[in-house]
Length: 76
Image (tube, rainbow, N blue to C red; front, side):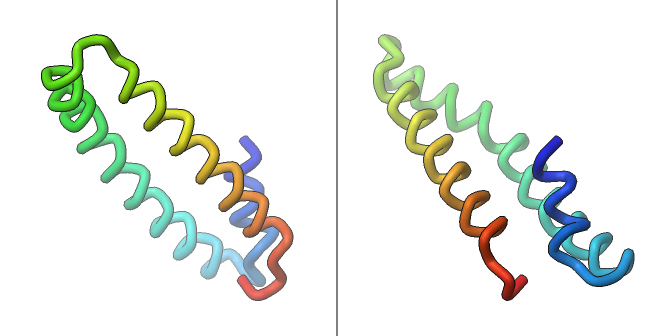
């Protein structure tokens, strides 16, 4: 829910909010389209799952840092 409110807080009007939301949704759809395929390829190469867990932790850290920078930024 927090990312959805960030769009409205970082834009000046509903048109900008819609553009920003559309861009973010396109990125989210790409991740959701290619994520399971990439996970399957990595799982075939490493069935134990250690590499997948490390990738998930790194991805979560990147998202937390990015969200924090967006919230603190006045440029967007």
